[in-house]
Image (cartoon, rainbow, N blue to C red; front, side, top):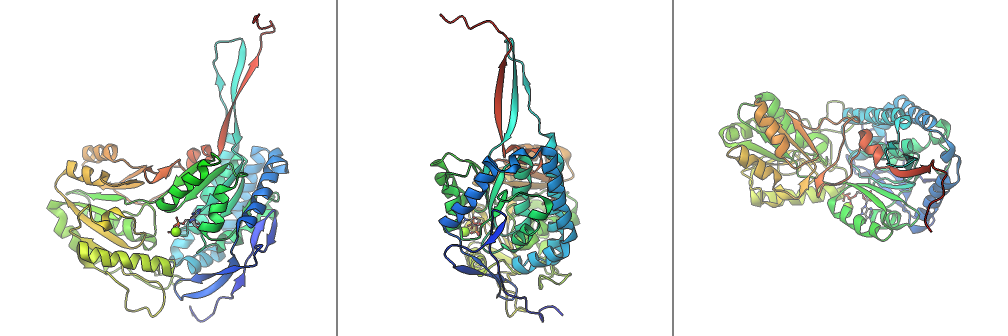
Length: 493
Ligand code: ADP
Ligand code: MG
């Protein structure tokens, strides 16, 4: 029976230079199960001294360790072995992920499979990185070498904990970088379990270090550290802005994958059932805790009322439940903080628009940070619930008159991560694809994400791309090499 076995409260450590080490202050903080509100683990609250230790380990591993001598094919093999460990331990990792983040177990299993796929992809890509020969007009050979950027500081969020770690670590390791990873303080556990296999697969000490802690202390120290060459961040736009400012002092390379307020656009004539499902799935998957959530649902006026009704009817059938139950489609939000944040937007929304369904806490749960899937309709695109990222199961349904109107509303946002358009008219579909300012556009679907295709945003959704060869590119420098073949001295005097 679920809920009868109390998870053991374990104290984890930081993983630095191949060893488990306590934080220097000795302070720890609790990690929760958001469905029971119980503490399930303690982790170190790391400070600047702990970050310094981890960066020095990564620095040494990069500058003088055996990693630099490891060829690309061997790095690839290590990534394959990591993928194999993930696959062999899917059940354990998925359960821990689900317990710690509140996401439904079935989704956690998909996520863990994606983690393995990500390591496999970059394992295969490691030895396909190639330079160019440059046709310079000289008796010379000019070519480029692709070299690792160095020590990567990687700061990740809590919505896809181990998958976000994989998106960061796999391309960095394929490129030959060394890493200091800071998991989100809410969800560090799967990344820490993952570290148990590093030595066995042949990752030398210091190549991947994991420090636990809060953003303002541990995360900020990593961004400021002069020994870090690049910061890769996924999280809120507010923190992204702080990171750019802080990284400016040492001119680190920065890539940012930030929030969104992505439009999901529905035209008359779209495949009806698929469209209604796509609207709900687009915004409520993973409790709406998705950077690309289709949180602005733009519906053509001719079908608007019927569409809101159909969404509302189907939303009643979304099964909220304990994360570890297999028929659960939505679990609790990740934390009390996130629950309070989303709840405050529900109150704002009730003043700004009409409620079709939801708007509060589902009554069947005594404990846990559950929020009803909530659909606001007749929402103005200037309302706060249309402009600000909520990161919870909250949809704003906005009517539009015609194609031009849909495009105008879709682009009227500071964000530009993703968009989707639903229609059977291919002319219209591709006109919208071209007109929308977003890094990812889906047609007649929303949210499918594959490691082979690039991921990242326009505008205030960040810069740089993850996944595919684009993701690897962000961890590479380009060295231009010029080899003179002409032995005559330079006639300079
Ligand atoms: P949220 O508030 O939804 O948790 P954040 O953007 O604050 O989203 O968090 C994403 C990640 O960024 C987490 O790992 C968090 O600890 C980290 N973080 C938060 N603030 C800072 C900061 N000032 N500097 C560096 N990292 C930070
Ligand atoms: Mg925050």
